[in-house]
View 1 (cartoon, rainbow over the protein chains, first blue to last red):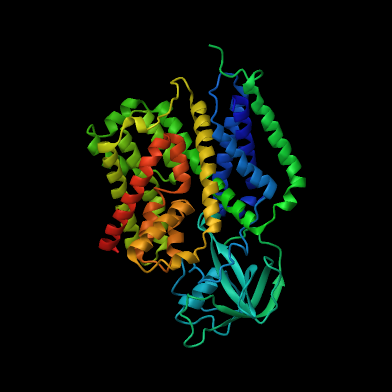
View 2 (cartoon, rainbow over the protein chains, first blue to last red):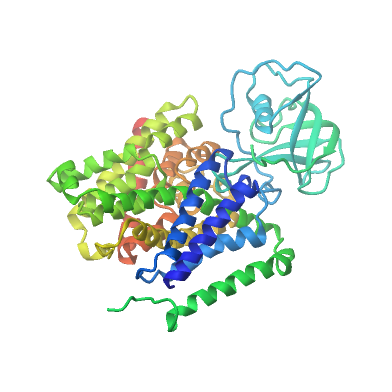
Length: 225
Length: 319
């Protein structure tokens, strides 16, 4: 790989990172929102290094062949435009992940309908000794995941701590409503179904929601919780 | 000697044409291939792959920048004064110094290479390489947040990681051979930007290799398999240690994943936290690229086995 090619690879890589952070919000499919300015700085640095290489006509060392691989993420970004993780990543029927930072003290729910994250719903359903969810209408936002169990489907959202590689699915089973298309983003309104006595331990199966309304919505800008 | 690359004629000028072909493929692909690249498994793979690359890039750029700065601006005499003369003492000092570099593992590899090229004892630089992604304040705070009510997890992580880093450094000092370590052949005249370019292209390429491997494992290894292994101490520790290797999660986020593995004992989760920042697929690729195959073939197994052993001992005592 000669010097001109090295410079072009760096410019392409820096440009791709700047594109997904400034022109579009695609970076939110991969990392937390707080990463944006680090990514802009890194993309700009890479772009400038490439530009310096184009301008300076001094002799360069031959670059390593492995640098060609840097075009792969660029290919993926432009060709596949990887979408946020969806129902394929959340398909497991196994015990759902315990949300990070589940509290033990929850404020009582007031108002006719309380919108909350799926993580908060799981925390209240599993860990809340005051049973604050009982009889309250709540609204959850997520995407639809089919279930192998009859008469239910899941509303799910991935929770990420840093990037999509560490995503864990948070899921609530929806009862009493026809299943939307797989991966369709929805707002589900309904009430929590407390677990039956003698049923599985809290935290080992997804909590259930008796739905009264399911509204299809476009994908939120920030796809992860 | 003429410039190695006059960039216009000869075999070396085919690179730009390949590049033009790549660019053309990109533009054409937007219309022709994109509709076929929609299988959910492929899309999930590509999301995880791009996420690993995108997330690692700022840390890699930061590490490469710091490494170039060490090479260009810090005189070699500084390190001989800053570190104890006796190498056996320099190892723990360098290991403890890892606590101040708030980066993840992608930053520490180029920095360690920069230190070695400035005359720091390899064993000390390697102790720094292992400890800095594991015990810096950002990682420790993330661990405290991820394990509410279990502050001992963060303490155990700090202690075990530092012990492993120092032990590996000492073992390398006693048994390591200089010829196993491929050091950089930067000419002294290579400037700041030139050193950065070279390291970025090199380490970046290997990062992509590691990202592809990690994304593949992430998609094809179902986590349910793991829960079957949670019963036995040694089996569960090994299972989570290997999971840390294949998932290659950034050390600043791995505590949150460990916290979600509720089926496992605290000791097994500690092993996940200790092994992850020291041995994982993207790190193995980065280390192979930076220090050579002969280095990685010895360093990686040594680090992995010491990390597992020390985790079990620390977990039994502290957790």
